[in-house]
Amino acid sequence: MPDVSVRRAGPADHPTLERLWLMFRHDMSEYSGVLPHLDGTFRRERLDSAIADADWAAYLVTSGRHPVGLAFVRGLSAPARVLNSFFVVRAARRAGVGLRAVREVVAAHPGRWEVAFQEENTGAVRFWRRVAADIAGEAWSEERRPVPGRPDVPPDTWISLDVPAPARPGRDVPGSVT
Figure: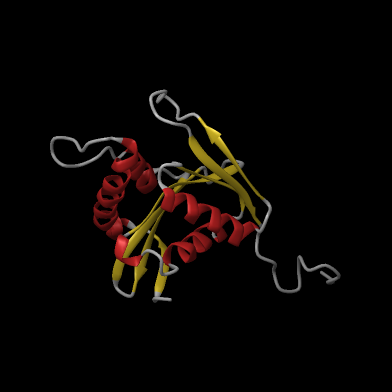
């Protein structure tokens, strides 16, 4: 597996996140049918929230010194966190980068998790089901939900799973004395 690092993005990472965001939105346009704005950009409300909203977290994924992906989490204070946006550049796909990135992001925020994807995106279908099984074994669920405000598009598929908090040495271990 390549040298992969996942870290919370800081202000110096914002230009890199903006560029990765454009690649992500370009990839998703195949399934959403959304064209870029006249200036070549795509809507960026989720990017702006991930950077500025205290209830969101933006992560940068790197391989060596190269940026290869992003992950945006919303609902940090909610009962369920949502992996709102997730992207790995094509050259880094199918090498374990995505699975490792998801593991690290969800481990940073234990608890209930949800992620949505489109059934037409067959690569995402395989990836997210493999991620759910890897993280939660058989203890995950899947359901289709309408896209809010978009009756013209097929429902999204949502995966839900629980990520336990890591055991603390000498604590949280059955039979240990605290």
